[in-house]
Image 1 (cartoon, rainbow, N blue to C red):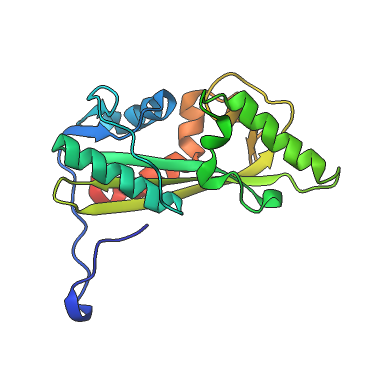
Image 2: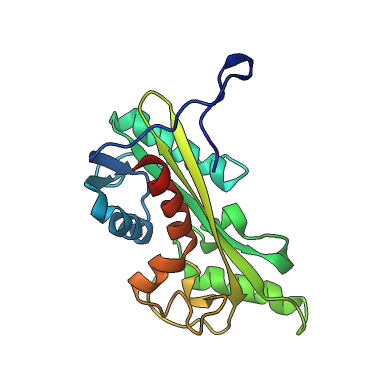
Length: 214
């Protein structure tokens, strides 16, 4: 978690700002992410509205980390909408590929956002490294909550696992169908949403957010 700014001259950190019930912009144009975040927000009296519904533009993701990109997206959505905004930046990091695709996970799917192509690219890169290559991987999710005055609270979650081929399951989105979480026999692509929400990187980050601001 990246906490609030510290006071001048080494003063104690400011208290974490709480999120009150009401409208919250989900700063994403990815329907799968919006659906998962809506489901997670359901019990907390929050009224989520997506950036796409508000016709907000997608910012250029110029950050070099998941946290930086999440904060960039959340701050733009909050500034343009005048509402608190929650942004997610997440992706797949493959150990044998030096953490790729990482923050470029969506870009590996190309202009058409075809994740079948992206998964095949990951598999081809691993295959090229030989039959004994490690297939260890993890998903990372940074969730950033921003207010129109520029204040942000950011939380980072992770889930570890291995990659399977061929992909399994038509649930989920992105790289879910090739990701097998540790201690699981089903990929994220095979799991029902409730099972995935219980263990995912997004659920990990969201649990931290709930504890801190809700």
